[in-house]
Length: 118
Length: 118
Image (tube, rainbow over all chains, first blue to last red; front, side, top):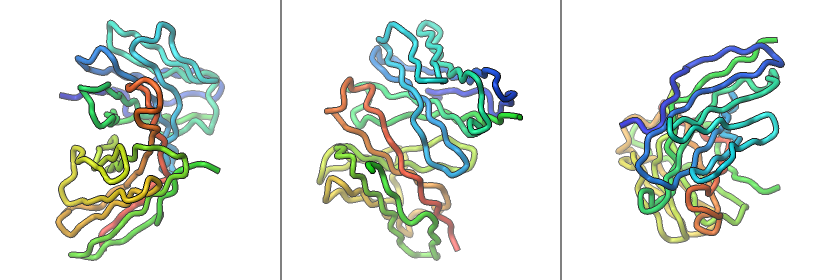
């Protein structure tokens, strides 16, 4: 069963506007972490933001914030004031805690390609 | 500068040949991972290692082998048994169990190696 679902293959946003990238997940583990990574055309995966399942507040890192709705199992990434350099693939990922996940692997979604228009 | 170095950036494999992808980290991380990314897809785990001299198979280990003789290094060999090796390979590391809540443990990635078959 798909554990991480990103339903938007591609998104467009105007420079300086905000954009929301969707991510839903599925797990039976009460303790898990949710991550967002950015992958520019160069290929490197860049860590953006983390949300723990027990965190009371939504995570924020500069222009990035995570809209965490635990009951709906969603962890959407919000990018405020988009910049041209934000154009990239964005991946949502989940990590379950032991014993569900002894190896600590990340489970990735299919990604969303964001294009920022000038 | 701390980070993860993957080499080479591009690699070509001939039929029946084994090739080795290098991954070195100077972050003093215990855990290291190898992922494969196919076009338009998320990442899939090949192998992981949580400690020196120990490693485990991931979801798609067939046709691959690894070693972990040093903490800093986790080379991946793509063997001739891997019939469809063309992909982008990413190495990652994390602090392991010393890195805080088990579900957090942020993975940091190298710049990747693009492998093609001649």
